[in-house]
Length: 158
Image (cartoon, rainbow, N blue to C red; front, side, top):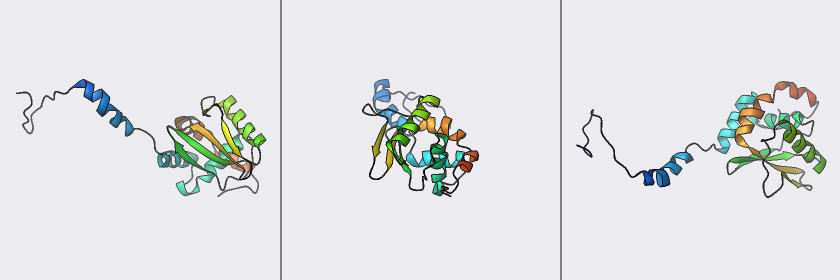
């Protein structure tokens, strides 16, 4: 009999599919959104460091673009489905160099927001760059190898 439940026996569940799609599916989708902690933990794991030493990943990220400014104070935060990187870059030229490198080599990595790729604060020398979290984890992070560390000299964050 539909609607009855007997332990150990299969049951038939009837439901309004409109409610399923409009109310329940979006809630299920929330479970699959990646969190900021997940991004940083996964980034640290892929790069071969710890969550507490995530600066190594940021250091390699800028080194890959040919920038050797220390990232000891760098950080990031979630921004919708993206990650907003707060990288220490000495000038707008370094910001442009970073953007140009990643747009050329990883076109879907840097995400435009309000028509621009980067917000640069000259006083604090921080570039706020929005990137696709999935591309960061799945595509860019595996390329941030220890060989990039040798380019720094005395700029290590470890």
